[in-house]
Image 1: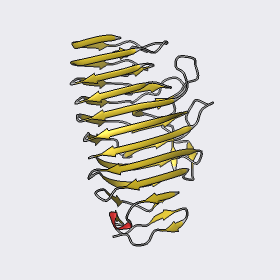
Image 2: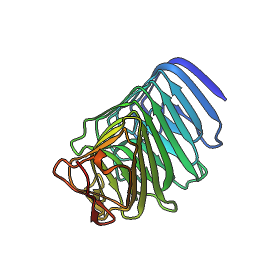
Image 3: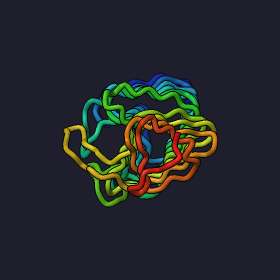
Image 4: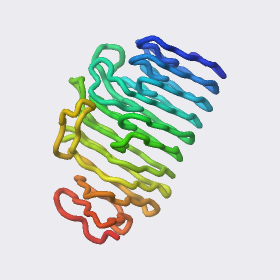
Amino acid sequence: MTKASNLDITTSGQSSAAIRTDRGGGSVTVDGGTYTSNGLGSPAIYSTADISVSNATLTSNLSECVCIEGLNSIKLENCDLTANNTKQNGNATFLDTIMIYQSMSGDANSGTSSFSMSGGSITSKSGHVFHVTNTDAVITLNNVTIKNEDSNNILLSVCADGWSGGSNIATLDATSQKLSGLVKVGNDSTLTMNLSSNSNFEGTIDGNISNASGIRVSTEVGNVSVTLDDTSTWTLTADSYVTSFHGNAQNIISNGHTLYVSGTALTGTK
């Protein structure tokens, strides 16, 4: 185990994450400090292990802010993340702030990737806030302030990218969480979205996806399951498409739009 606290780290080179692990797993715990990366392919955190960071400021000025590869995890508590991912690196065809993937390079074992964040903030200046590809990922959010400054307003994409050999599967668990934007699930991909404890989502779900070069990678939505508890709501901003819906239709605020469940319009919405 590696522990660090209250460091001020700035990197400028390529593949130079401020907090990172290499092959072999292990665990890293960081408390406090400021961690800034400026280079290509250099997130503030790159995880091929189990990394926990609390009370820190994390900034990436060119790359993703957070990257998890394979059977590994990042846990954040009361951290402030900012990313301005304006240049693609390696096989990546998307721009994003938090990328969860499997490269199949041997750096990380395959399995479920985990990203959890409680409190703090995410400021996404360019690209998608979350992007999941070629792996199985679980994203857990609790009372995180999310500011998406990208004009396309994509909260989450689950779809094929520049890697192969794995599946594009994501679970998004939101507790006491406000979410907004577009959720994109490719035709070969799967999303399970669970909202609880007064969470609310204002946005749409569909499968029309283009990468950062404008190349269309999907036109049809994949397998999507959405569950709302009795305290949580979804406000539609356009027609949306899911495979299954679990919850009270009254918690869907149609806003003049329609939620299609396996091709059938859901009735009983507000």
